[in-house]
Length: 281
Ligand code: ATR
Image (cartoon, rainbow, N blue to C red; front, side, top):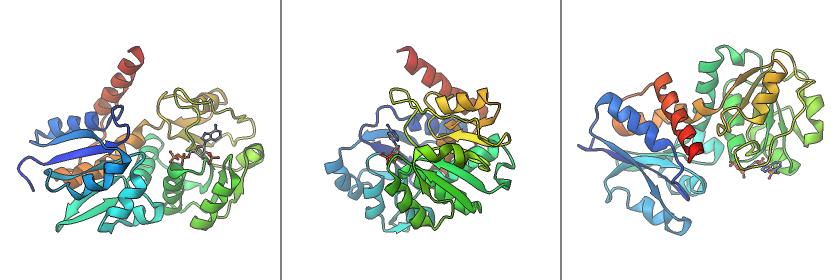
C-alpha cells in the first residue's frame, strides 16, 4: 500500500457529498496517514479521470451520480453485486487491475440488520420505485431470500423490466395498486426520490399495511421522510435510511486503507450535525 493512500468520491455535482466526512472520521479514528476528498468531474471528462487514477496517486474511490454506469464499463473486473445491479459505486486496484464493486445492497442490508435485527425473517416486500436504487434494493432482498417482491412504479414498464431481470414473483404495478399490495408485505421500502427535501412528497395511505410491517426509506434528507412519518402515525416500525449511506462506505474504506471501520453512534451524530448545519445555512 502507498505511504499516504489517497481516495476520492466523484460525481457531478459532488459538493453536497457527505462521504469525505465519513471517511475523514474513520481516518482520524484509526490515526491513518491517508486522505479522502471530493473531486467534481463532468461526464465528458470522466473516462480520462478514471484512466489517470494511478498517475494522480489514487488507490481508489467512490463514484456517484451520474457516473455509476460508465464506471461499470471502465473496470477491468467487477464483483457480483456490481454485475447484478449494473452499476459501480466503489473502485479499487488489485494486482494493478481496476476493480469495481457495488456496496449499496450491502449498505441497505447492514442498515436494517443493525436497526431491526431479524427483520428479514419474513420474505415479502413492497418496493416503491424502479430506478437504479431500486435495482440495488431488489438485488439485496433476493440475496436475503425474499421470494415475494412486489414492485410499484409510475412507469410500470420500468418495474416490469426489473421484475424480468431479477426473475421475481410479486409482479410490476402502478401506484393505484398500493392498497392491495400492502396486504401481507412484511417490508415496505421507498427507493424513489419522492419525499427528499425539495422534491414532491410521497403520499401513501398505509391503512391496509400489516401491523407488523417494517417501513424504510433510502431517502435520508429529511431523516424522517413523509413515508416514515405516515408509518409512525400508523403505529408501524420504521428504519431511516442514513445508515445505508454509512454502511455502504465500509467496504471501500477497507479496500483503500486496510482496516474495516465501524458505523458508530458518534459517526451517525456527526452526519446528523452536518445535515442540521446545512439546513441552518
Ligand atoms: P435512482 O437511480 O436514484 O433510483 P432514477 O433511476 O431516476 O434514480 O429513478 C427514480 C425513481 O423515482 C423512479 O422509480 C421514478 O419513477 P419513473 O421510473 O416513473 O420515472 C421515481 N420518481 C421520480 N419522480 C417521481 C414522481 N414525481 N412521481 C412518481 N415517481 C417518481
